[in-house]
Length: 431
Ligand code: NAP
Image 1 (tube, rainbow, N blue to C red):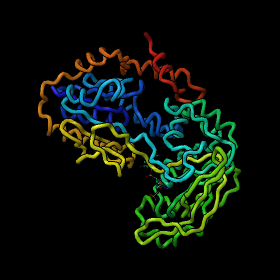
Image 2: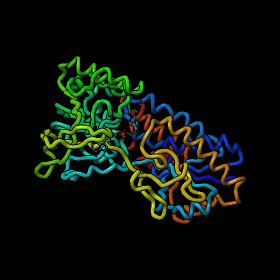
Image 3: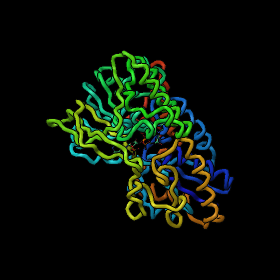
Image 4: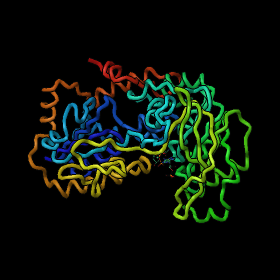
């Protein structure tokens, strides 16, 4: 028998479990450990609440979760309830699928002013992550969103939508209430490079053109010649075509979502809270990187959301690639018995589906490395350890009770109303 622990129950964790199941059949026992009492990681608290079709993939993870040889071990925190060393002693393989929940820091003066927030906190706030439920962002003035990736699009779209446009979403009530009272007249999306360098995908960018009360604004002067679009890959070309359409069809809806390209934030100013972002105009060097031109201007803002990427939190004693913000690894192998998958392995790139081949690749490596297993204690060993520490483990059956309670509490038209506090999640279990 092989014993495998996967830390993190997001897409990377569940795809790895599915792959290990396919690889080893009944000759494996897999424990998926998560610090929250609820599974699915980024599907629950990262994917935008109005992108329910993407969230539907959790049904696939549920199929994996409900098989006998896979177990969800929720409410267990690595480093507090059990150490990596202890898990390595109990399991033939320990797989870190811990994602990248920390923001890449915005290293400019004023980044610590109240009103400046990273996307992890802002996205966690509207998605009901217990760590960020208390955020209370300022929604009564201009908003500046830094970054030209899909997270910047999610944040801008959520800020711009009307209550009716959240129909069918699982945005949490505290965020919906705050957004209902919001008066954000302009949302500026800052890109330090240009339209050809955006990391926004076409479907997500196209959504900005269909909002009820907000209109995307692109300055045609920022767009390269149409002929140059031929150098782009097809997806990027579609995205740039959206930008061209936005530039050609300026709408007159009340909220403006302004794409400010070649614009690098250099400092954030304000008296005790953010009031403006000072931006420097950029030009691109021959290698495509942005450099400041010396020309600066200020954008008034009461909210700044930095969407410039994420980092995996390091674990003391585990090799870490500080530059890349993820565990140091060779194709997922960190050290004997220890592996990384998903964003913890490759950094915060790709879609949910990218994690599937990642999971299958690591299952093959584990198979090469651990043979038929080495008689470790596995599950019963973990149970004994956690019981000795009085840890209250949440099972998948418990999660199903929490799930049922969330579905029952949903406002009309919404799939669920999430519990946003761990105690409330634990309290929803039926004794
Ligand atoms: P991302 O795609 O890596 O984009 C980060 C953006 O931040 C880039 O435009 C980057 O510009 C910019 N940036 C980085 N450092 C900066 C700085 N110091 N100052 C100003 N700008 C800076 O990251 P993301 O948007 O967080 O997305 C993470 C991953 O999740 C991506 O793979 C994304 O596609 C995926 N995602 C997908 C969806 C979806 O499919 N619906 C939704 C959300 C997220 P440079 O290019 O100049 O470095």
